[in-house]
Image (cartoon, rainbow, N blue to C red):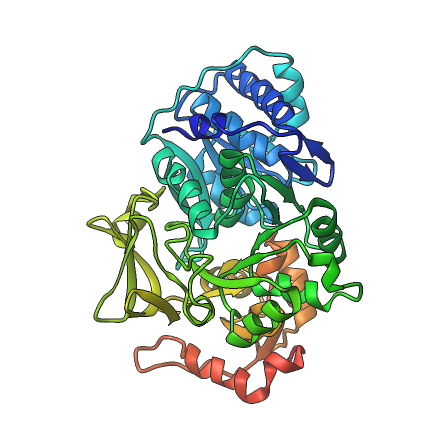
Amino acid sequence: MTLDGLLAGAPARDDLVVDTGGRYSSGEVESRVEAVAAALKARDVAPGDRVAFRLPTGVDAVVVYRACWRTGAVAVALHPAAGSHQLAQALEQARPVVTIAGPDFPPVPGVHPVNVDELTAEGGAAAGVPAEAVTGDDAVVMFTSGSTGTPRGVVHTHGSLAYKPVQLSEAHGLTRDDCALVPSPLAHMAGLLHGVLIPGASGMKTALMARWEPEEALALIERESVTYMVGPPTLFTTLMDCDSFEPSRVATLRMISCGGAGVTPAFCQRAAATLGVVVKRSYGSTEAPTVATSRFDDPPDRMTLTDGRAFGEARLRVDPSGELWVTGPELARGYLDPVDTEAAFVDGWFRTGDLATLDDGWVTITGRLGDRIIRSGENISAAEVEQHLEAHPAVLQAAAVAEPDDRLGERVAAFVVAPGGFDLAACRQWFAQRGAARFITPERVEVLEELPVLASGKVDRMKLAARLRAAGAGRSGGAGS
């Protein structure tokens, strides 16, 4: 089944999408999809061509996804917070025939984006555009951090993505009567699944937030009778800590699903008690979306002490090194770079790079083989941060390390060798000058005479992490120099 076919079969409703701009019925969304699809076809976008977009979380992003699938084009989702450097790297890999963006698109040489309003006007009151994609064709490209610092384009097919909405709806006990609040960027797999595919397939209402604001979130939960949310712990912590929080304001909320760093038993217990909800952990990635979770009616200790179990046709195994491998119909077909694909996808299995244990089918993630930093649900490549740092004339050598943070899960701490001095202010100015995304910019900088190294000559990241713990960096919130 194509994604366009999947979404076309959903029951209609008067409030399919709610965002900061308004409330949109199924018919209004469909009308916009037809217009944008017609405009893309008028621009000679053919099945299999790639169409990139960088848009905030809202109805326009939903429309662009669906218009791409209507025409058989591949939607290339760019993070709305991506800076010019990341965008240039992503667009060089994807080579889209059209790029769609709002007025805040940072300058990228040779790229001249069109906006959704222009496309809608071009399409006008177009007649229906026939779907041309077939099952197995590429549907989406999303970017995730690579070990080399260059974003990797993950390629999903119609088949891999059409499989997930039904499976997740069943596992979470979601129906047409539910309402999901989605603050995740729709360029994230969590945003695509819960903001576009699951609501679109089931006819469930979704409330989209372009920017996380706890007070606004409370108002949305109250006004739209939100029942379900998915996101990193920091979202729910800030919600509970909001000055205007009252249990009555979240009375309709019944379940939250969390993943990433910071999903501790203490957090789960507090969220369950304060929000009055079922709290469950889930595990997945851009390459292997939500391959493990617990059902809404599983034992509470399994929900909060493990990262779930495989469901549907997904399977998990741990190799002798402790690395988790996963397989199932939801797997991406690979990366844009075939070298990356060959290294990570082996005989139908995806090597996650995560360390894990399996106990009677229940998986618990214990660490990472790589050097990713997960800040409030964002995957950050330490190598990418280090490349920016070492490009600064004052920095001879740099290492980026995850610093535990009660609110964000992890944040970026940088250790640099800079004889002439280098501080947090200089760091922030440099990252902004280079067009780096704000969320990858270090929030702590320490200058060392030399970086600790292992016998192999590689930086000893464990020693740097231990230095942070010893200094109580996670509690101080400060920046050294």
